[in-house]
Image (cartoon, rainbow, N blue to C red; front, top):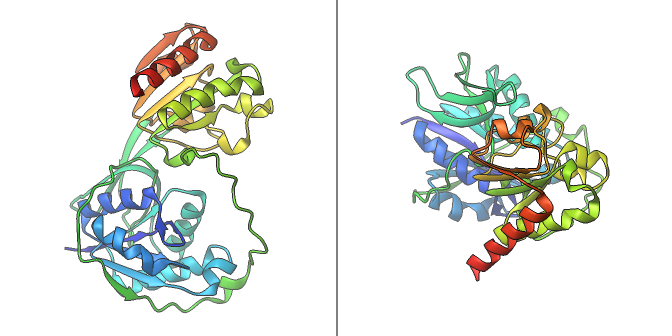
Length: 320
């Protein structure tokens, strides 16, 4: 069976959930070979093997931390040349898509971004994508070279599938471009104790109807009762009610959780573009004609200031 390269997104050896989802998809089309780079790369082997990696290629060098994406592209190119994989899978983060695009150019291959599913095909992997603000679903495959595919978080379940996970060192020769852009400083993101927005299984978002920064407390309370991430529409962010880092939509982040709860959000096409692939969508809005109701699984016509606290209380009661 052909091997499939999976780029490992980790922080000092702690593997992030989208990588484990990629291993699930990789097993559908071949044998997963993980590529872990940077500090703590070797420490990822245990969890990667537990989730299906037959092999873990590791490399550590100062370049991976001191410079931007090019050193990682150099390493992935080396892995492609060493393995001759059936495909290369990369998480659909901002960095992941840049790495994938640069790699595709390097190896003369086609690229598919923001896939939401992957299956084996007679002529190579077939990727499912959502197009035109998720109004259409497309299936496509790369017809030239080794397919490079980025996959959105929450597109596949995390499945335990123990494999060998043999660790091998990956020799990497860095290109002249690798040191072209140096990282001068880093500031850790302040933790809220909530899940990362793009990776969360549940997202609770507030929009213009929240009517003020102080009122986002009720959105946060519902999110915390569900163990969810907090999102916001562009209108709420532009008004200064919530940080841009939490914006969901065409000019914000794209999410695809198991459950998306939209409170006081009208459902403009720009917002829908960032959340329409959610598995189950619930909307709370006092305007029964709001466009958001055209795509929901469950709609509540009512005042969010009454509905959301009641929902939070009910969740907490059932948990207790």
